[in-house]
Image (cartoon, rainbow, N blue to C red; front, top):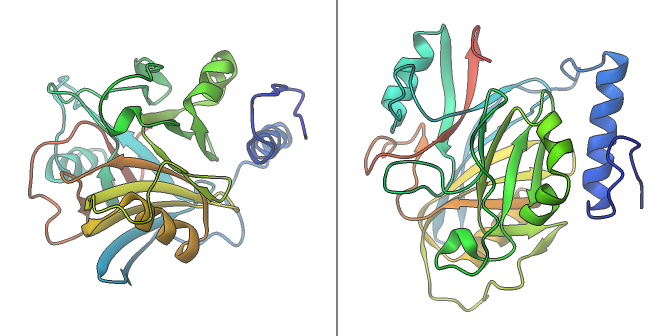
Length: 270
């Protein structure tokens, strides 16, 4: 197993260690800028069997991917219209966005939430509880300065101090849908449990894709699409029937969200 001198844990998977080692090397050599092959964030539509799926693909080395929860007054933004207005007031424009994970009645993230390097909600390590968040394994979507990671909660907890040092943005949710190219074994290929679902996934090159199945789909079929069609090696479920993505016709329909993930362009922000 490859080990970085900065991240020497036996708990971390080899692919993650390689990413962390690369990120550390790039930072040390001053190579954190955009890749010369980098493409602008791309919004696409797919049809997978009878399901329509919207995606937004972005490269964390060249695109600005951020998470947003509250406005300057401490009020949850709640929807894409308010997030768009918030960004425009800072000279930025929203390319795409989706809700960033499961949340409570007060629109607070149910697990870890980090924004601009500030931890606003703690890591939730509870396992024996009801709901998709607690389906095991669950995990954390992490953004450092120029890299993205999807990390199992137990791995994040095992190296909490080191992750605190690299995490600029993070949202915890569950379950993990794909781990190292393998679909979560808890997912039943014959399941009749189908709802609208959204997720975030990473391919082998570290490209981030936000994806939403706009009509009902099972966990297994959605994971299969992310792995087989988008070539994602790791994926984290975000939420179910309340989920939306901007830009789509139904983007601002439905209830208020907790935090949101957005790809933005322009100047300003952290």
